[in-house]
Image (cartoon, rainbow, N blue to C red; front, side, top):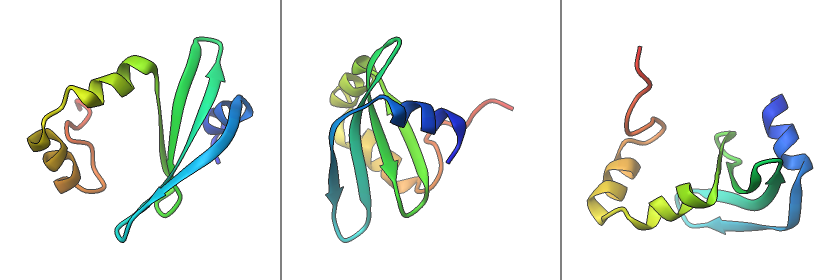
Length: 84
């Protein structure tokens, strides 16, 4: 576990929520930081994780099914790669 993830998990609030289906499993938890609450989403199978603030979570609701399908279809990689 890296330092940033450890720091986030130190601010964990409440119980974790596990969401799973036949393809994957994610563990979701609210964490409090000095900049407010965030949603910590971890994928135990891959070891990947992301923390999202309220605006980033809301931005998920703005997406259409095509955007979500493109994200899922680009498995194990970001939809938009980091610039070189």
